[in-house]
Amino acid sequence: MMIDVERILKMEHWRDEVIGYRIDERIRDRILDRLISKHIDEALADGINIHDASLVMVSDKYGKVEDIGYNDPNDLILDNLGFLLAGYFETPANNMNKTITLKDVSNTSRTVYTWAYAGSSPSASPFYSSITGGAGSSFQIGSSSTAASRTDYAIKTAFTTAPENGRVSTGAGSAGGGTVSVTGSLTSGGSGTIRETGLFLRLNVSSTGYEFMICRDVVTDTAFTAGKTITVYYTFTFS
Amino acid sequence: MIEIDLESEWERQVLGARFDRRLQEALFKAQLERIRGARLRKSLKDFSVVMCIDKEDGVLKSAGFSEPSDMFLNNFLNIFAAWFKAVGQTKGTALSLVDHNGNTNTSFYNYSISSNDIFLTFWNNPPYGGTSCRIGKDDTAASRTDYNVKDPFTTAPESGYVGTTPGSWASGQGLISFSAIISAGGSGTIKENAIFYNRYDNGTSSQYYFAIFRNILSPGVSFSAGDTILVSYGISC
Image (cartoon, rainbow over all chains, first blue to last red; front, side, top):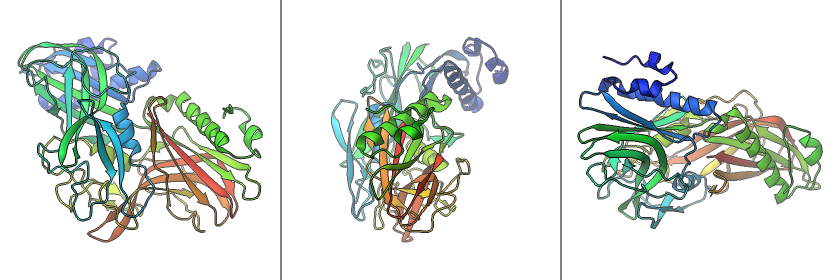
């Protein structure tokens, strides 16, 4: 049976209603978008902060939703993201260089250029992709429910089975209506309960790629077993 | 710290007072609390305070505060969204930005693989990269599609783009802040301000300014030639 998203979202226990429905992959993103908007609206109605919202969905190979979780609305923008955003505000100057210090996933400080003068070579840019392993964004899930802190730099408790034990590429980000959204998914190799999600940027630092967590969210318990599709959906709200 | 409540008679409390760092911080803090107290505090939110300091005696002559309904512009959202792409050695997609003249620009990429495919952070040939502020005298409500101030002044330097200070991140407050200072060449009343990413296109030898925030001020901030105009900006995270 196909899901009637608009009807479900009008229900008080919409989350429970979603579980068990088969979601066509073609409309999955639209449904997730509506669900996360609902989550944000509910948090706002409760007077809770919600700068970034995340939603995790576990579905079987036929697209049937088996579990769904969403983040604590009080989760924080991490220091890495704060420093990165702040780093782009800079006094114009000739041959300017500006660096910031971010913590990579091993909690090691890395010097990242936000403005770099590099002659005719782009290799100083943090967004330079021609490095081993490339650059871009990724997500990771974990099983710790420890509250988020601005100084978090990695998932607290990673899973032990691949690929959910590592960081997995997201798709491209999209902007619209005052929000920026990004989605990633994986097929689970083992089983467990997701309680945290992280969003990462893999950036160029002196021709080596390092990964930096910019958001860590604690989500309601979301169970999965091997062979399931786990989709993580992030939305940033700007006003 | 001086306590200022923007919902009461703040003008009587601060206008005419000697301007110093404490007063500046108090006004900024009052505006931050006002923004966070509004319904729109639930997201990343930009805001600003514009202050005019009298050239003769250094007192605060006038001050204006951005409206809680002001918003991030589409250029900022598109740049931020471009940070996200699949990890790999490929270049990203061309950004669709609107420059200071209202023209769509697709020259720049989010992730780079060559000198032609470069993100905003890379090139800074004269007249430079960095960020700039501009003030104007129009109070039309902000729209996400705004690309410049609506009605700039005609006298320099307030007619142009003035560099900001570096941004700073205060983890405990969840606050990014920076500012810009203008020594007025003429006179008028400031009702709007905007912040821009500066970007030089080496290929076309063109300087671009991409507006990322535009704020409407209430009340308007009056100034005369020689006065110091201080624009304090924040992003509540």
